[in-house]
Length: 200
Image 1 (spheres, helix red, strand yellow):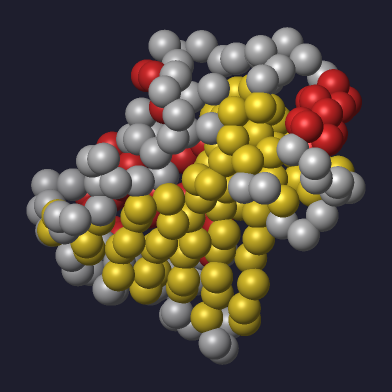
Image 2 (cartoon, rainbow, N blue to C red):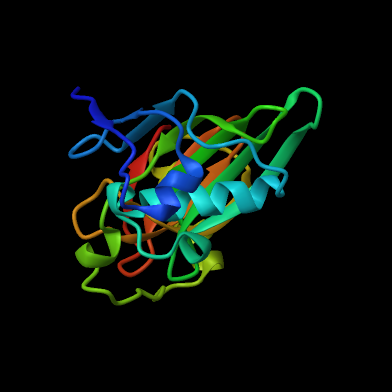
């Protein structure tokens, strides 16, 4: 897996304000992101402000258009004396993208020390910049999952049913992720109602 070094661009004010060293980013056919090092200058701004400002300098490499719209903060933990962790979930047209998200680690001085996660590039282009909408309800998806479980002679309680984009399938289909029991998962296509993947 190749690593691409990104250095500071003297003509880019935003980068000058934020970056203090190179970072390695895995891109291309590999959706894993791993940036490490001294990635931004110390800052007294909020962790969320620091993270979003940094994302705007990296959006082209990540293949996202609007970080504030596509990357939603789902958790902030830590403290000023031991550093902060910020977790973000990827969204597309208001719908979460299965498995896509980033975790930022900030040191006590407000400098970003690492960014890790998974981002599938250019999903809007794959969808021809048009959102998809479910043709079946969450209740029907859960019922389909129960029928599928019965067909493979398995019994499990449905614990959650939620719609996602599935980024690693051709066409980025809209699916219901039906969760069962002990980490069981069934993906039901939100348009056709067909079970397309399961770990059961």
